[in-house]
Length: 347
Image 1 (cartoon, rainbow, N blue to C red):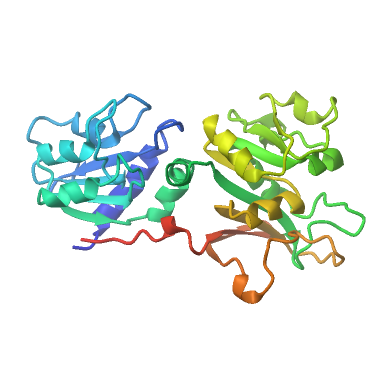
Image 2: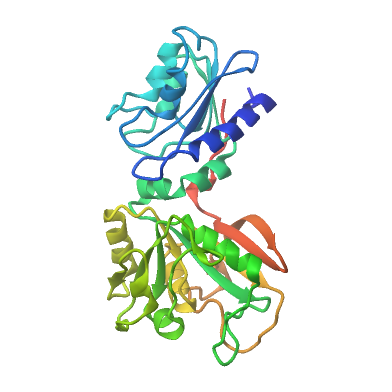
């Protein structure tokens, strides 16, 4: 049975609710309970580690038996394990829910399998509804669960002919105010922002997330990668968070350490060398290419060597969105072979 319009609207609302929860070791999840005729009976979301999960939060607002025959709409597959709280799949079964619609499969070894448990109990299950939006909300948690490292976004700005700077190295500003404002908003949504030592030495960036002249409440932790020393008076030292310095080119070691520190999302803002290194290492989960309608020519390319020697080795991407930003265009893409993009619905 396919997802109907009422369930689709409910999923949009569940995603709004999920965003109210804190980012952290647990995913942000929202849930709605719908009556058999589509009426919203209850809403819930996960309020943080140790609190009831979204489904249980919603069920707790109903009288005993009120959810019998209802549909639960959830942004993540109901969990199937007991931690600080019990399995949500069991809670839904015991409440008498007859149908569950969810956006994303839970990749956790211990927590996954809720859909199978629900089906075994006779509950109709449909997955994949608005998976892209749900993925974007908790991409850091999903990547941490699947790969044991932060979710990594690699960003660059380029001219229409693929250049990151003019022949003399100047690059401010290729893109316009709307594109730069978008970058700062996305910085504020990340746990950390990474650049190479070359960018620090050349541009002395503050690595803050700014709304005009004001700082956003959430500031990403600055990360500087590379073997060249950073001047003691560099702007990064005045960041609200103490910067992390990695005197290495081993990006696997860097991302492993960031993961161990609880960092789930990294916004890579470095120049072509660092961006290319992350892509070549297979560590780019998302690409943001801000494209300006200007021509620069020359050899200051937005990317350098990414390990592609022939066309059959090309790193294929799936563009998930084209976003106009004033005169500029933002291409948002992810690796075409990303298994998290293969979340297809089943009855």
